Amino acid sequence: MRKPEYDLLGVWLDFAFNSLVAELNRSLHNVGLPLNHAQFAILQNLFIKDGQSQSDIARRVGKDRAAISRSLNSLEENGFIIRKALSGSKNGIFLTEKAIENRTKITQAINMAIGKGRKGLTEEEYETGINFLKKIYENLHSGAQPGYQSE
View: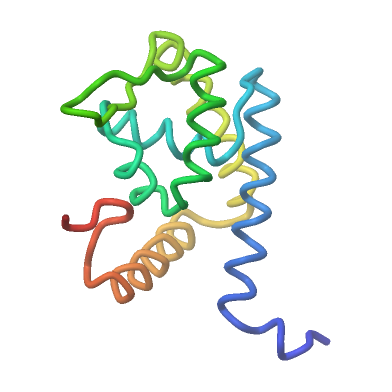
């Protein structure tokens, strides 16, 4: 019999999130990419909108500037991003050819992780789950899209 303290939404969201992160990290390694989930999230944001500032990325990924800085340094060292001046003293973060060339592998890794996580779910159950999580997000962020809140 399950203990009632484990029948809380936050507990299961945390369990699922941490398990999915670990699986994504394994999948990235399995496709030969020296990335982790935080770096993956940054690259995904840059695939949506290249040339963002570090503070924009931090806000959209939901991490503090120090964590984003560490991830960006690693991505730059591995040749996935480059920093270029935007305006004044602000730098923009841009994808390199290496990142663009590896987009298929990056997509393959996330599909492997999600595929494993959604095993046994019907398409309807999967879509219901996504809609459930979107609604929670929208309720907490006044209808804003993930990572793209009004400025």
